[in-house]
Length: 293
Ligand code: PLP
Ligand code: CA
Image (cartoon, rainbow, N blue to C red):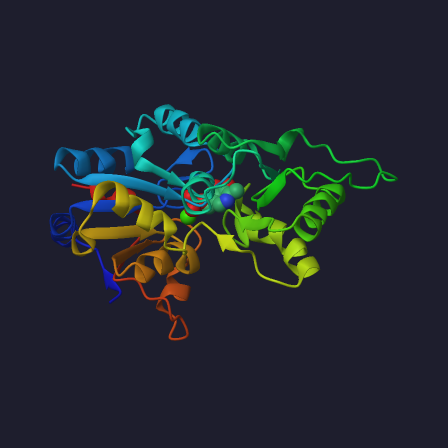
């Protein structure tokens, strides 16, 4: 518990111990548009040793295709099959778990990532970035085709979008309420901005109930999807992240060993504080340190 990976020998032993490495993205590989030092080399090292890597991100604003472009821009190898995002998890949940009917559509408070992943699963949607809202005096028109409301991060969120979401959820029988991820904040411009959990909070308050499903970490669904697809051995799998209540809890919930890096949200003081109940198996300063000689 909370072993500090300091020396090269400790880091090599860590790599040898696992076959599968699940990576949180923001705060581990990069911060926004800045890739951390040593990360491309560390990823190459894992691949050269035949390790499998997966990228598990709560960021719903981008589709998996868009994430691939980001990886490409950083010169880091990744395939679509390796990327598991909360938007993809949401689309997959609607299709495979809810068996969302073809004659229904999804109302989105969120960005292109959600719309694109729903479309890739053949699910119709409305709202999202194209929804500029109603004018002040408009009532929300009935739209009985809306069978689910999905909420993720939306930087253009407004009151009328909330009015629509609430109206569909309360007037359309059986309308599902789904939140991509509940991060309260996310890193932005050197500080933090409100995250998807904060965007969904007004609807949770208005309805007086929890969402029917929340898909991102720490929920187990992305891990289940990875297991279903690739049949990994949990004992040979480690989750690497920077946030305790999403990444590390996600790993712990799945019975995995975990590595907390200190390049993101969690500080060393928070991690080591006696009041911290979410303890990772290991911690280290930066994932890029794996590339150190
Ligand atoms: N949500 C949004 C909108 C984000 O932009 C980010 C990070 O950039 C996150 C969540 C957290 O993503 P991750 O799980 O990769 O740390
Ligand atoms: Ca993170």
